[in-house]
Length: 156
Image 1 (cartoon, rainbow, N blue to C red):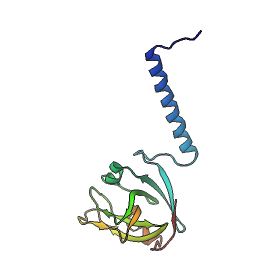
Image 2: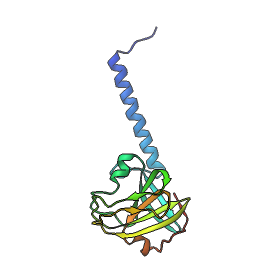
Image 3: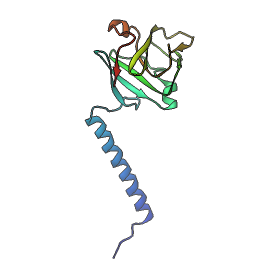
Image 4: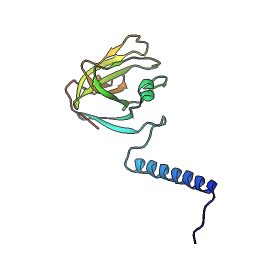
């Protein structure tokens, strides 16, 4: 003999299973060192030569558009890694920024170029020096402070 669960019971079981699965996946991310930023972005360690940056990885259109806009600051050693949909000449801007940035343009596993210490009030476009798929934003002056140069190997 089988027992039928009422329709509402099936829905509750599915919701509980979904919550349990999401919790387990979240714990797995924390266990393997990934975790999420307060904004819900996964953390990734970006290595540029000998320099390590704990970066939030963004890849969806809304997150790519928002970037670091409207945040009060970016702590030392932190950044945001933009994973763009295609390798092409990228154009960034300082819309809604409150602090200066260095933009580290990345192509084929190397630093393709650096746009240094851009003030938050800069109103122009910030084009990549050549086609890239990744951009790492770090606090203004970071690249100079740590001696990051074009051509250095980048991995995460």
